Amino acid sequence: DTGVSQDPRHKITKRGQNVTFRCDPISEHNRLYWYRQTLGQGPEFLTYFQNEAQLEKSRLLSDRFSAERPKGSFSTLEIQRTEQGDSAMYLCASRNIQETQYFGPGTRLLVL
Amino acid sequence: GNSVTQMEGPVTLSEEAFLTINCTYTATGYPSLFWYVQYPGEGLQLLLKATKADDKGSNKGFEATYRKETTSFHLEKGSVQVSDSAVYFCARGLLTGGGNKLTFGTGTQLKVEL
Image (tube, each protein chain N blue to C red):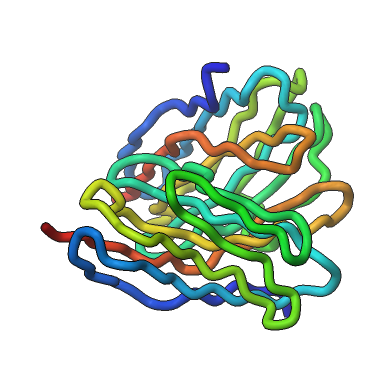
C-alpha cells in the first residue's frame, strides 16, 4: 500500500493558462474524490468517480474544470483559463469499501 | 442544511494538558463521522472515525464518541504532546448517489508548547 499520490506537488501558473493535475489512488480503491482547500478552510468536495464513471459534481466545479478517470485507475483534473481565485490546494482521496477516504498530499496551485 | 461546525482556533496548550475540540454536525439520516489531522506541509491523515451512534473512535490517545442526541463528535486527548501540533478537521460522510463525499469543518489549529 503506497498511499495516494499526486503530481505535481506545487504549480505556479499565470492567469489564463491551463493546468492539469494527476492523482494515483490506492490500487484496490475503486472510488476517487477531488476536493479543493483554500487557506484557513476545510476541504470542499468537487467531484467523485466510481471506477471510470463520474457520478457527482459539485456546483463549485465550473465549466473551466474537467476531471477524468479514463481507465478507472488514475485521475486527472484540468483547469482551463485559470483565474486567481483558483489558487488553492487540490486534494485527491480514494476510498475502500469501509467508507474511509485516504488523502494524497495535495497539489498546491498558485495563479499569478 | 448539512454542515459541520467546529470550534475556532488556534488552541494553545501546554504539554500534558487535556484537549477538547468541539464538533457538531447537522445531517439527515445517520452519517459517518471522522476526525482528520493535517500536519504542516502535509495532506490530511485519518485520525479516527465512528460509523454509528454511541461508537467511540480512538487512535494515538485521541478519542471521540458519536453522540446522536447532541449531534456531536468532540475530539479529546488526555495528555497532549508537542508533536500533536497540527490542524484538526471534523468531517461527516454523506451518502449521495452511491458516493460518500465528506463535508468538513473549517479546522482547528492546535499548538502545544513545552
